[in-house]
Image (cartoon, rainbow, N blue to C red; front, side, top):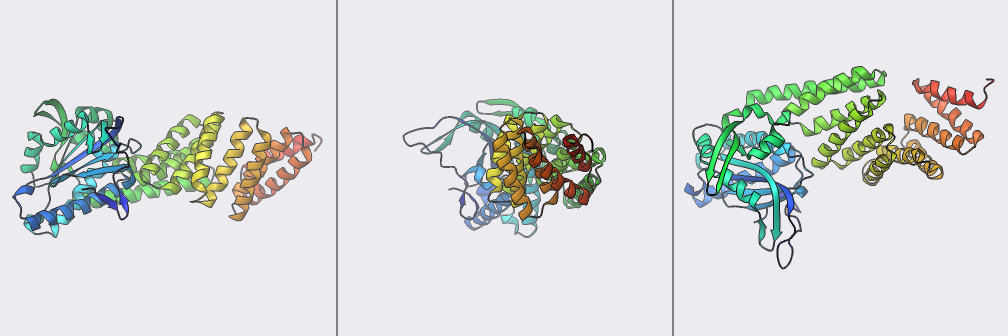
Length: 436
């Protein structure tokens, strides 16, 4: 049975290859098993399955794991879900199990005893094959051996909690230990001996997930993080970029600790912009790249377009105009059907990248298109930037009159906005007439 994560969207990918197995592909492997499922009546089993899948769909969605990235096989008393590698693995050991535990507790609070749900969860990753019958691979076998481990069963049986999590040793070292949102300190080692598997795995016990009181504290922290980010943007409006970077760094740390994917992506966008203004372009690239990953994993195309545009400008700051052009082209494709304002900056970025590659005619075409979009959306800073760079391109093509016209129009906008860009435009205009 295939799980539908959203109405009309099948979780499985169309990857079955007629006549045999397809090539191996890398996937994150998530397995779940409901405790005591077989001892229940048919009616209670159906109620448990309905509650489990309802919580599972919502937990994955709220954790930033898009339905389209998942393949699912129902296992009667549980499920196996394979997640594509473009979804950050840290979500499956940090945000997701915490959300699932909270949703199961909510379900149990309103359910009769025999319809309540407690689950064991195993997380691993590796190469798998799709064939005419489903999926197979040693990595899948390992995940199910972890799910059947006695230490995991004992941990759930002896606790009032609702979710016990286990990861392979590899997953713990490469993912959990490297990401603060996964809270590696909450895990403890567990020796697994199931069939052929002998491994030192890592387990997070059921009583380590936030309860309602700590959930309220987390909500307070999230509010503080958004305030920090808001102050960071306010600092940028006053051209105080060092202060802005410090505020966004603090916001990112809180969002990461809470496993708030969307909040972290939002704060990273602001942090990357501050770093660009401070000419710390390598830092900006790192921040914007992570923002792209997080927004893409959350299925937020509009924010992904904005993040790709910002990443293009960060690469341009490093004079890596080839990478810059590639990211602006991706952003342009997304922005065409999601966000007109981002479209303007993506077009301007295409002009800037071609300008850096000395393709001046192409750069001018994109600058002019960007200017049209900025006018349509009354984006005054965008108009000023486009006019300033359009003037530069005209000047390099020995068109001083066209350059002067662009710079005078840019100067009027920057003076009206009272931005620091005014001095740079005045310097360009004076270069046309050294006597002035």
